[in-house]
Length: 296
Image (cartoon, rainbow, N blue to C red; front, side):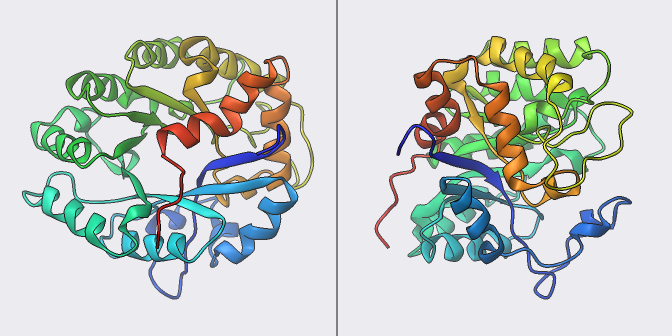
């Protein structure tokens, strides 16, 4: 890698002719109601000097993860998969073993369950979930946390209960971008970062327009001043060696373009040293997701 190359640690793909994406039914997601494939991402990534990516699950369907593994095995761009298993199922360890035993199972790097769909803010504290997380850690995999800010205390409890595995906080914990930082979110982020087995993705907020502004037209490089307090909070809590960049493509295209999201991340991190920027844009992701590609 050169100093400008990057790993995109968080993107999605889906084919609506294969399976529905129920979350796309939410108002505002109309532009995403089409198929997004690796072939759509490839030219954007190459133009932005992104030479490896992590593809992340979108639905709680056991059939999706094998498809993502097959995608990674046949791609020179997708270098790892964060998939899904039912963490509360009695056979979760067997499900993980079956995925890892596949010919393409070496591309599985982590598991994610979208806590955003759970009504219980304490879902990650449930004994059944903690048993599932223990199985994820025993399989040598990390766990991506995608949760609303009010569920972050449960994420802290889960990371504390499973000290032997790595927890990755997606999208800075989904703070609401506003004129002032929500201290409850900031305190929860700091509590999570105080645990050494946690990482944070600089993702999800990078295309957000300033509060009160209309969404930026895709391709328009909006300013990042409104994002600085959120970036500084996670930088101060985790440090650059525990931050990793991700675009959240194609969800980011609701408000911005792929290259503009990368531009926002580079602007936010401009004051870091060269080695610190390399950690954020590639080193942390390579370490956490073990991006030496396996043999097919």
